[in-house]
Image 1: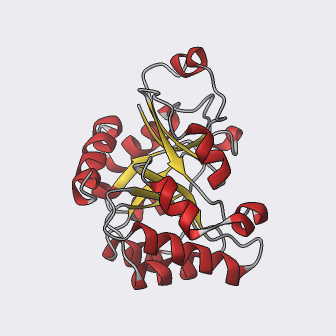
Image 2: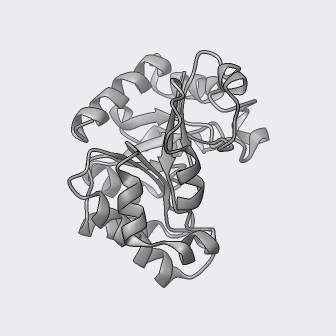
Length: 227
């Protein structure tokens, strides 16, 4: 199983990681300070991310270009980053732009938050496109989905999302996620990596083997991002 967006505590034990079972999880972080705690971990079924969550004022205030760029050497995943309806729009856009600049020509995937500020995120990606962009829990309109697809973005989706939104996304750009522990009742995820509910939804919508589809799409994305 593939979970391309979940939150896991940086002090998670090896036994707890093993309990995730047959799953590979992209474990995003909320701040550079949190990411630095996991930078040297060697968890075989976790890919840790370097994040600056846009809904966390302290993470935005602490952002520093030099610190981020130094930390980036230890990560193949950047996330969670982006923009959010909560907080200072100007500061969020400044930090997101600087993160995209730091990721230019770097072989990384970027898990992007866009709640309430989709147009701002798409504008930033239009100005600084990146081949590893993944729009996490993207609740855009059909026009916004089409624009994101034109920019080369992939979409990590979960079972809390409306089926009609997922149906409009290009099937070759879909990835599975839980965003654990958020909205556990709606995503139906019991733990990070538990993507069975979204796999069933994708299978119903697209009549496809969702697990194989997600793996195939991830390989295409890795190739595009030069990972």
